[in-house]
Image (tube, rainbow, N blue to C red; front, side, top):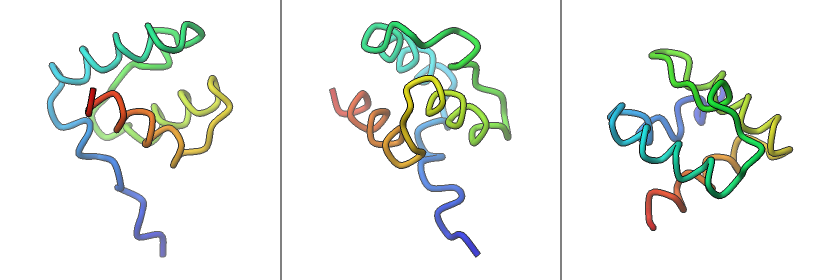
Length: 72
C-alpha cells in the first residue's frame, strides 16, 4: 500500500491559491499549458502526472517544485 498517495494534496485545498500558483508555474515553465495545470476536485493526481509528463519530472519532483512556489 502506497502511503504517499495523497502526499502533497495540501497544496490544492484552496482553489484561489492554486490559480496563483499555476500562474507562477507557467511563468517559470513556459512549456506548461492551461490544460496541464487544470485542477479538478478529486483529480489532483492526474494533474500532477500531466505536469510531470510535460516537465519530464517524477511526482516527487513536481511536488517539490510546487512546494518551492508556495515558499516564494
